[in-house]
Length: 345
Image (cartoon, rainbow, N blue to C red; front, side, top):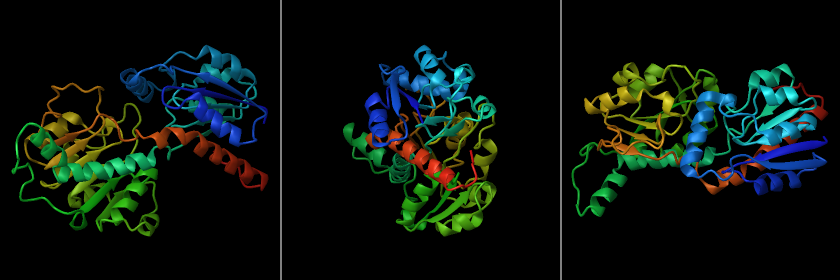
């Protein structure tokens, strides 16, 4: 292929794209652009939120990309939106590559209309989020953050929201809602603790779950039996929450809810009410509908809640290694085409 245009941002920089593209011989020419690369953390979080809720129209088309895309064979981005207006300018475009797990910043309908393949990177921060999820499970159930906070305030604390009911991971049933890349990595790590693992994912063959040492069940059964429910799914704008008052009512009174995925997966008002009324024991939440979340948020202020500031995927490796992971996917796909395998999207 002739030309690739790579667009760096505040998380994945030009040098990260350059390193990945220079290791490959797929493109004769590579052009490097930047999109909001100077954005600081608070602004960056707002940008991500806008893209996740408004999609590829969250921001106007980047003018430099609008010029470069016209004769490009591939566009390589992380957060930069690639909407219909840009795609319609691209007469030679064959691939849109994104370092994100989701494709909210890409107009998938427009890409499909022009026969452009989209390659995303669901594993770019998967290891980071999986590790963080396990950390939150331990932090919430074993009162790690509460003890630290008490000591810093001069208190040697003995009583906690779950005192008398603190359990080891090996004796607990963990329910994973969503069994994609991150859900599977969480399951792999939980097997080391000896936990019983239930999964709910209507798109996964139960036999596939069994191979990973998990039991595939209905959502209702998972909610009824799990001591810890951890969310690892995606949700489209406008869809109802996966966990609302009805689902929280089904959960055990001494169960915990963990959310490191999407804030919209949970009805936060219903979660607050369920915790206030003692319908579940506790929760660990890393994602909120509005970020930064207010210090006066009633959920954050609850003693039975461990709150994070959307740091689940924030590791050096999750950003710097993502472009190389995407290029490996592209190379594998091209090799499969050369072997005459069926073309798939």
